[in-house]
Figure (cartoon, rainbow, N blue to C red):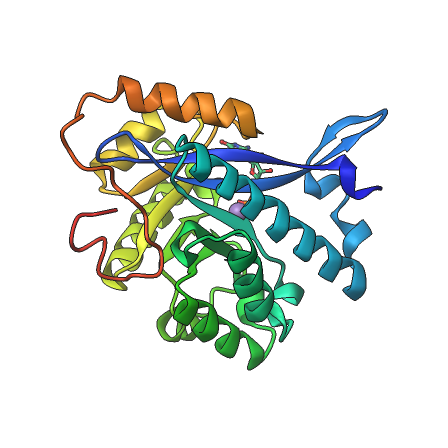
Length: 269
Ligand code: G
Ligand code: MN
């Protein structure tokens, strides 16, 4: 694997209230010379040695920030872009400094970047609390990814400054037809809101799921029913088209600021 073979695809998240794009998740793809475009589950073990993981994180943050800066410079996409950070990388004491340095190098305000963590990242020891606090102080928002399939440590959810909760697609994909999964979705939305977090449903694959989630006042949605992860140029066109098709032109552009817990209550998410 060479650095040039790792590309980032971008998948939008929309507000279920306005239908507008409010954020983007950066997803790594290995553009394999023979096997085509491969998602991380097919190769991520290859990076699971500490030094490679560190290099990968550095590369992912650098590439994503360069992309955000390029979009902003041309004024085409101004949305928070989230990067997935592995549990081990989150425990790396150099992470906040790396993030701060990368943002500075690209001249970006911290609010343009978000970090997605899985529940496993919250369990790796006391380092996580420091990292979470330092990143929040910088202004980088933290999202809890794949909620519901790890060891949901509710004490961590209560204590850590997490701005967004992303319900795992396993619960969302058949929504609302599977009643037991639907019970988890409903409970997760209520939990996120009572903790003043933005709630995102990931893996939204059908219009029926979109409608149900909007009715249940889930804040944001991401999934194939909205858009697949796509290369940067395609994402850019998608965002521009979607904005142009938006009917509520007079409303100010909603901007997801994960770090600020008051946003949802203020109706800004
Ligand atoms: O773990 P995380 O939530 O970051 O996983 C993101 C992965 O989920 C990406 O690789 C992306 O391709 C995939 N994905 C995105 N939307 C959907 C969807 O609607 N359905 C399914 N099955 N996978 C999705
Ligand atoms: Mn993610």
